[in-house]
Amino acid sequence: MSSNQDFFDHINKGYTTKGDFITLGAAMHNGETVTDAHVKIPLKTLNRHGLIAGATGTGKTKTLQVLAENLSEQGIPVLLMDIKGDLSGLAAASPGHPKIDERHEKIGIPFEAKDFPVEILSLSEQDGVRLKATVSEFGPVLFSRILDVTETQAGIISIIFKYCDDNKLPLLDLKDLKKVLQFATREGKEELEKDYGRISTASTGSILRKIVALEQQGADIFFGERSFDVQDLCRVDEDGRGFINILRLTDIQDRPKLFSTFMLSLLAEVYSTFPEQGDSGRPELIIFLDEAHLIFKQASNALMDQIESIVKLIRSKGVGLYFVTQNPTDVPDGVLGQLGLKVQHALRAFTAKDRKAIKLTAENYPISEYYDTKEVLTSLGIGEALVSALDEKGRPTPLAATMLRAPMSRMDILSKSELDDLLKKSTLSNKYNEDIDRESAYEILNEKIEKAEAEEAKAAAKKEREKLKKNSSSSRSRSRKSSTTEKAVIKVLTSATFIRGALGVLNKLLR
Image (cartoon, rainbow, N blue to C red; front, side, top):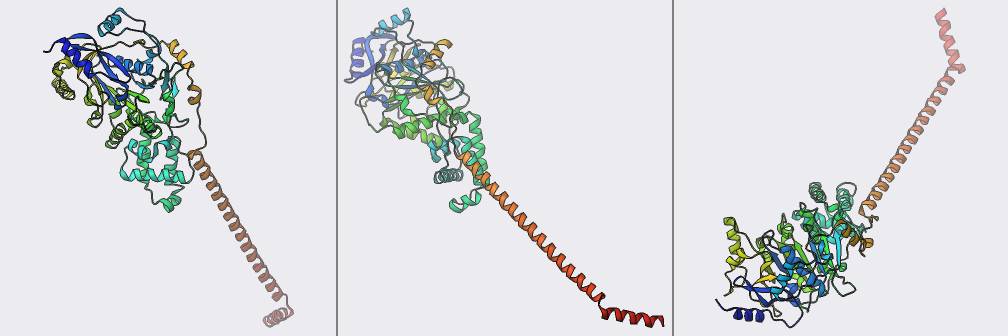
């Protein structure tokens, strides 16, 4: 095995960078931290996406915290998915600890406690800035993939969106979409068939059931106005530090459909609105997806294709995606192959399946003369990880078992009063937390149906009046005819001729 000096030179050469960078920690050799052998990640390559993986309790969340802090200090905004509810401490400075000082002394970086600008976001009824999107913003293709519908049903959804566009019917929330689907097979059946073709009642019924299933996961709260402007994720404070936007998801762990729906919407919106910038010197936004397996859980093949496509393309917009999960195998191969930075915490080998997963994980890292990767993966301590990144030219850096630096902010959550104070300071709450329910497809179609029903009732009443009038006229005609007949009979009976004839007959009878 090479000496520590050779190892030190190996790491310093591999992690030398000319541009701006963030320091994750110091490399370890033979189980010991090599002071000043710093593992530095160039800002230029942070839009190449990344992975933070490892068993429970190995320090993944703290690594995420370290990355978020250092990005913020560099003026790069961050979005964090807080599923476990343990990231709010970023808004408060670390109280410090002798063990933290000892760790940083080994690494060769002075420790400094700091708080960071934080914005709390929410997808549900939890406190925070509410994130919403309209159905129209999703578009028929993305919405069809979320619902996992058949090709025929996807065609019907496209017709519905086209009909709404042509007739100026805003599709804002799910009740709008449900109303149009019902209208298409009832009151508006003839109208839609004439211009767009026949729509099957069975197909619309199936689509409606899928929408109801989506509502059961809380999507009715997410769809609506006001739509969240993704540019509000890219704010910096007065000191030039990027905002750390924390999306609280503690109450939707059992609703993966809602989570994946939101993520796909957000990534699609970012991709469509952010300007193209290629490989610039620094990213515009970094998104960390904690418990990343929830995005891929129960996702259809069509949805997976959409996610993989966005991951491949969004890099050119200056946006980096970082997946945080227990095992790299939770992330599909198509996504895993796109990742530049990999921070692998310890894995545990309790079963044959675990040992197989460790072997597969080890094969995803560069071969190193200084490490037996499979052995290192099971022997890493808390706050230690195998790191592989890309240098400024896009080449893989040397594999480094790294002693990671400690977070500068609090490694615990805010108290209720601290969280309330933070929420009161929010500059986005007033913009997004007002409930808006303007006239949309639901109200317009209801009004149209009511108007049609009123016209129909009016026409029916008119028809009934005409019928009564006709019957009355006929009755009068019959009455006049009967009266004329009676007069004629009376005239005959009272005529002199009739009387003389009758008297003549009577005389004959008397004789």
